[in-house]
Length: 248
Image 1 (cartoon, rainbow, N blue to C red):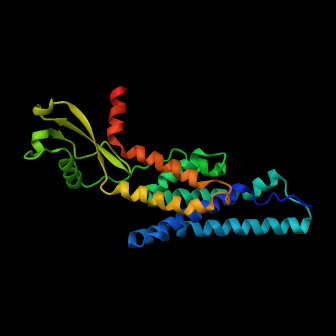
Image 2: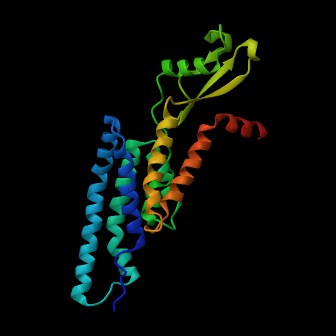
Image 3: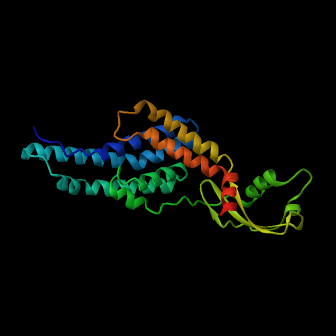
């Protein structure tokens, strides 16, 4: 009986991950979520088709030759599909941002589970995004920091509307506190409105999808998304982050 080398486990992992990501995006009905799911599949469909076509080609070649390709020959055969898939994944992440960036970072860090082409394409992945409008930032800061009866200038003597950095979860602004609050130069981290509910909601949907599949896929995606949920929860805890910075 011939050994079967043509269907490496990381290809199953990639297909299962794609199905879970797309299904989670499509579970929510608002137009924006459906649009995100459509964007995902616009990139994913040609990649899945290429993998399936390559698999069929290898199976045909093995049937005609009567021998199974070696691991080295399989690696060469799958190279082009992996390169195309990794490129499409990176474009998906760049277009959709947010949750997909976090997923891409995990894929990049797990070279033991996914092809090296994916780690290379996703290496150095960051979730920098366009900053929030300055008016919205000031509104959020005022709601969270101003005491009853205070106005903006009671708290801040200086405020830079241009952020030092902007990511999917939050952005940071330089400011100087008023004399009343010590006249210190500070960095103010502003969480994007609604982002915690959106991102953690996406992960909960994925966990719900992955749980019934435990034991049926090469990777326990429930554990993967549980780890992602824990990482995201830490990012939303600004008080804990500030306390850690104080200790440093």
